Length: 460
Ligand code: GUN
Ligand code: ZN
Image (cartoon, rainbow, N blue to C red; front, top):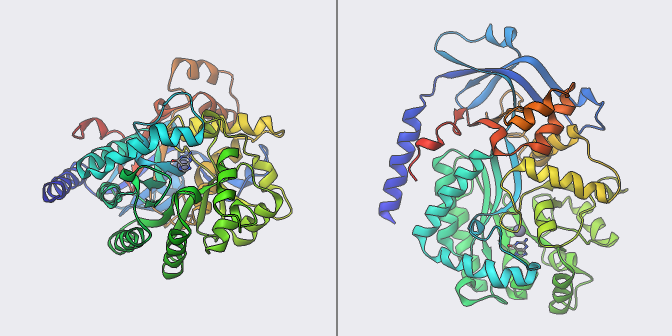
């Protein structure tokens, strides 16, 4: 443990030393959303500067606009980085992902419940070993950086050490993340079980140690109703009452067999959502993964409480869970707040560009298409609003944290060739979404520091 902490500190110092904290002036094409776009013609929903610039001071955006206006502001000691002709946008946000599933991704041939028992629970059992947890946390953050994701809402394993490793790594690298250890006390192997009491005590200790430390936030994380006894759900409810500042995250209505089993385990509940509702787990900071098969009553309960439904398209396709009806939820009389996410390792890619490509196809199978402006709003400001973080990340507003992604729509020969036929910003965004992946992420900034270009130099 001591050795791990020492190592981490040294690495943090090296990281800081490589990139001195002078002011930065970034030049490029800048794009940030002001509100949710109503369609591809809705230019007033975003701010776009063809020759734009951002001035970054102390990790925050100090000025944003046309290059000549922004460049006139800074005094001495400014380093200018020219990203033209690339797009500079707010860093991408992944609203639901599992850190201990990096070695579960690409596990063949199962629906949710078998996939959990055959692959996921055995793998998560390995995170009892704190050294393993630290190694994977480091590699997970590397993948985030490679793919342009600067904020995640993450599930760690049941082991306190797994959450400690992820918070320590994220904190050392200056990231804004929401994370929590899963609470699970039944219907899984002993190696991944806690108890109602220990899950309460460990969560309480983790909140005390990490929530609000720098940019870190804690999510109270009962894994899902199947793996939490009523006693543990009571504990989760108590934690939510005692810590209203924290998020809550869990899974809801992903798969038909899961729904049936949940209803058997909680026969007094009106439906799956009511299980969580009864224990006080719905609310504006509550993030529900999947929500594919909600009834109208359940959707009303989600809407009235301000809870967030999280759409994980690559996972829903991979596990054969179903087709999330994005516009059904967003256009109903009582709309739902919706975010998008990878759900690695049920999800099949770390890239939020790949995720929105699959989201486009799933949405199309339900009828209307999602346009590229709305897609990129969703990946940035939309997901930040859903996570209640939009005052800090998800836009290029002055005063917010300088978490940025620089996107290159000509990153591969095929993209370059396709771009010869792209005439508008919306077309370029759609090429990025449809053909892009980590290769299209030219640079990433976390709190004003370039991080993707320094990855190769990091220790393995
Ligand atoms: N439901 C409960 N746990 C999980 C998980 O790890 N992944 C997915 N996709 N669904 C879950
Ligand atoms: Zn999940």
